[in-house]
Length: 174
Image 1 (cartoon, rainbow, N blue to C red):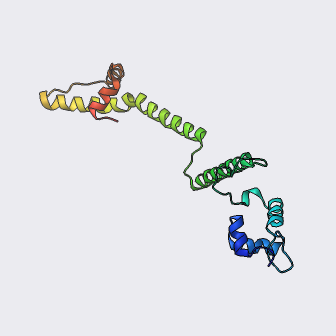
Image 2: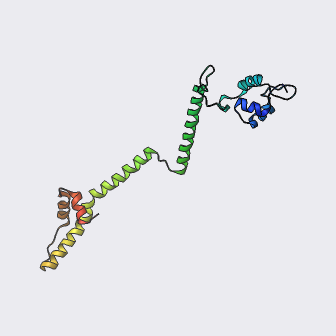
Image 3: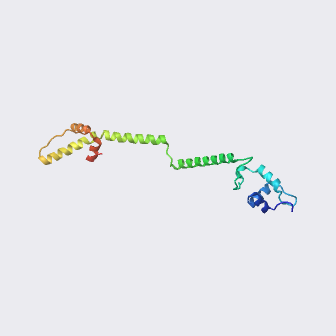
């Protein structure tokens, strides 16, 4: 036997025996007449025909240095892969409804804040008649007199309260 066996060449190249068999089938190895593998010629052919991303790197210190260094290519390829994975995750989260469009969220919050403000601004007009009626009823039951409290005056008083928010909350009115 002139060259190496598949197992010997796999150990020499640092790849699996299955990878050697695949390279043999696809013609990326140089074989002697007896079927053994010409290591030097096969190494050169494998280096020419194999994608750098698909090659397994050894763990030695000089694995990513020296002439023909493809470290920057590998780093760029890794960065691209990470970016594409992140894009896919964002697309999936959008489809699931986990992500919200910032402009839409801002418009919704603005609309809700406007509704809340309008509710507080119109509160005195909505409750003035109810408060006037309740105060009149309390006064009538206590004094047997029937005082007339004007709704407009009650609304003016409610609107003039210095801390209207606290007054409204303490009265239990909405």
